[in-house]
Each structure stands twice: as C-alpha cells, then as structure tokens.
Image (cartoon, rainbow, N blue to C red; front, side, top):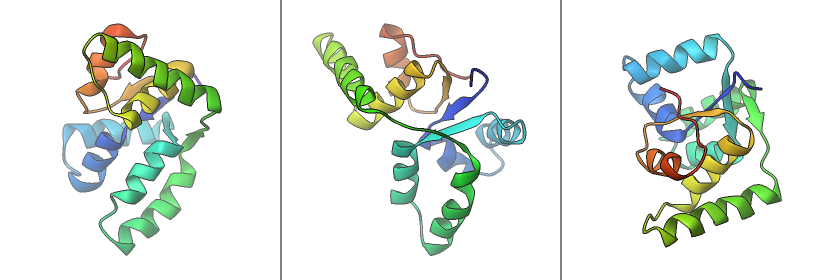
Length: 131
C-alpha cells in the first residue's frame, strides 16, 4: 500500500465542485494510476456534505471503487493522543482531522489535503503530505 495516497475531504470537494482546478487535475491523475485511498471518516464527511440526491447516488457508485482503509480502535486512541500532545503545545486541531492524520500515519501513506491543520500536525508528527 506504500504508493497509495489518502485523499482528504478538502481535495474531494475541489474535485467534485471545481473540475478545472490544479487540485482536481492531480487527483484525476492519481485516480487513473489507482493510487487513491479513502477511509470511513472521509466517506462520512463526503456523504454529509453532499449537495443533493444526485451527489449521494454518485458517491454510492464511486466510493466503493476507491481503496478503503479500515479504522481500528487503536486509531481512535492514537488520534486522541496526537490531539492531547498538540493541545499541550497550544495547537488545537479538530477531532476528525486528528483521526485522518492518524490513519495516514499508521498506514504509512501520504495525505493529499488542502487543509492547513495537517501542516501543523506534520510539524510535530510523522505525517507525510502529498504535494
């Protein structure tokens, strides 16, 4: 799985809504190369943010085609520990982003994101960001 890249919700949103952006172009290339991965929490965010029934139906057809990374109980604990450590340093990150970062770290894969919170996590933890 070393050549897979976990695709954050922020990138999927650009892909679905701004088809001619540089972010979308990079993601299209990764999709063609079959290098993309998704997790349950990212899928949940995509479903929650869908603009309507048409987008929901698309997600139902599309997401099962992407490599799925399951999330175990240890992932939640370790994501919480990342949050604990960062908060002691004055850095507050949302719970969902902590879990996404932990999934990327524990699976030793890069995270493709547009969210600045992950850059902050990467300063303190071995989170590889795809550029």
